[in-house]
Structures are given as C-alpha cells and as structure tokens.
Image 1 (cartoon, rainbow, N blue to C red):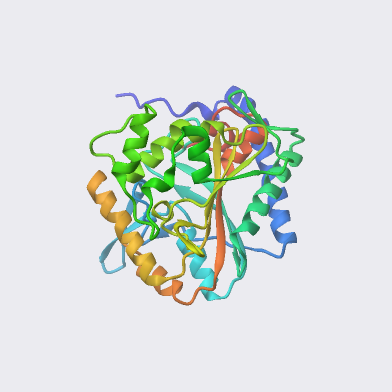
Image 2: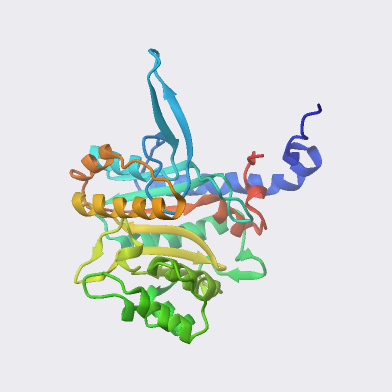
Length: 348
C-alpha cells in the first residue's frame, strides 16, 4: 500500500507564497517581545504538559500518558492555555510576566482555528484589569507598525490599529445589536433565568433549542448578533461579562451580576480574553467544578481540577492577566485569510 501524500505546506511553491507572512510573524514577535521587556516584564516558558489542560466546558484537550521508570502510569494533557502555570509563577513571586506559549485545542480547525497555535499571555500583579485594555491597544499598534500596515484586515473588513478602542459592556452590546435587556435574566447575586432570556430571544426571532442553557443562549446571541459588529473601523473592548460567563474572573466590586472580564475584537475577530483574576479559592473550586459538570453533561467527559493550582491561588497576589491569539493578530496585520498561512509548520 502507498502512504498518503504528506501535507503540502512544505512544497517550495507553497512555501514561497507563505514566506512573507512568516517573516512578518517574526517581525511582530520581535517587536512585542521588545515592548514587554522595555516595560520590565520577564519572559517565561510554561511547560506544555499538565495534570489538567484547563477547565472550560467547551474546550477539548489532547491527552497523553506519562510512564515512570518503574512502569507507573498517569494521565497528562497538553495545556489549552498556560494560565494555571503562569498563576503559579505569580504565587512564586513573579510580578510581571509574559509567555509566547504553544497551546493545543482538539476539535478545532478552520480559517481562524488550528489544533496547535501560539497564545501570548501576560500578567501584571497588583494592577487593575483596565491596564490590560491599554496594553491591548499598544500591542495592536505595535503589530501594525512592525509590518508597515495602516490597518488590520479580514474578509473585507478594516480596523484602525492606532485608534483608541471603543469600550462597550456586554449588556450595552446586547441592547444595541440584539435588542435584548440582558439583565432581565440576571439577578442581583449573579444567578440566571434561562426562560427570561429565551422569551426575549423568541420575540426578536433568534432561535433557541429546548435543551439550551442560559450560557448556550448568550453564546448564540454573541456569535450571531453582536460579534459581527465589533472591531469595525476601530478596535472594540467588550467588557463586564456576566459572572456566569467568567469562571476565572473576580466579580466587579459592587455588582455581582458581572465580572472583570473583557475581550478584544478587531474586524469582527476575537483577539484577546482578559480577567481581573479571581483569587478566592473556594469560589474558584466551585466554578471549575460547575464547568466540568457542564462538560460531563454535554460531552460526556471531564478533566481533573489542578489542586496544585488552587493551592497556589491561596497565596497569589491580586493580579490581572490576558491571553491573545498571536497567530490571529499576525493574520490581521498581514491580511492573511487563513491561520495556517502564518504558522511556520502547520499541523497535517
């Protein structure tokens, strides 16, 4: 039998088409690394293998097995984010860190998704999460400047990377783009009412399914009605996510309905996700358990909770952290149409 043809990215003619994007990637990475170092950050390199890959209900990990010299076996995973490891470093005494981390997510492939990609994560101890909003603006401008781009571009849309970002709360975006009052379905303590949200969606002709959770419905409104309008002309920071949708973020002081989480958008593309970090160990355990219960319900599996992470959280200082899809940023700065164009060796 003949073996299947190898992936064609390495063919000389294909590589020559991709090479300008790849050299631009290097230039952007150099510029960003220099910016962080100039800000007094320390670059770290989180281990990819972990006892838990992360505990988000709808993220899927690659699993492997560790075998000791005496034959003992244990389950390990390739991490979906270096977040747990980076927070352990904050607990260890680091105060400003960044990581160009290779991460892996199963069941993801498309123009904006790849099984292995690069996540730029950075953390500031004792800093409000609004500081990270300013960081995001600086990084967009830096990436564009590194390749001489006047705008970020994707699928016919443009965004000025040098413009100040529009800041919109999730509730404002729901009202503006979907005509939905999100807080009708969120109580003062952060608990949610799926029927109240489903009723508003039905009135506006947005589909729901009988087994939809409140989170499912929120996600559908975001994807179908809100995200296509974000980051058009200038970047958008979508902030104050409902606490139900921010498992790793601390609640906003004075309003338990929402948490200190924001996402950065350009050209309708989500580029970054950031938190004012939750450091309450009991709350964090409950939230991670809820996420894994939902994963079990929907996908029939669950991942372990990293007890070492929770132990570190107990001594971690107040901090804010962000995760930015580096490959997506390169795509928008160079005008690439697919993520595999900006990855040196795409996964077959």
